[in-house]
Length: 107
Image (cartoon, rainbow, N blue to C red; front, top):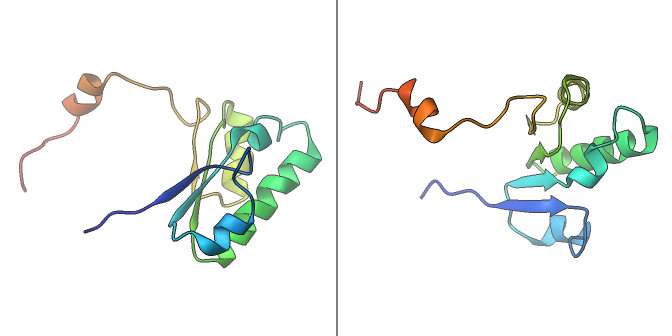
């Protein structure tokens, strides 16, 4: 059907590492609690890197939320996180503004 499943907020609350090997997910979204201080905190930076590496070895992709600055987004991209997310990448826009730039007609 073309659907994919994502494990959201990985690493926080009730989402332990054991879920990675048992749940049939395609994408793992790294919780922002680890990402928000990666510019200043070496331990957080290495936690994000290790989660990303482990997910990569399992053949899955990663999203890292809370890339709120250009610097943090650059670090995430340097780590090869598949999809950095946050204001450092781009700010939200109204759907109408986004759709105006796209043609919905078949080519």
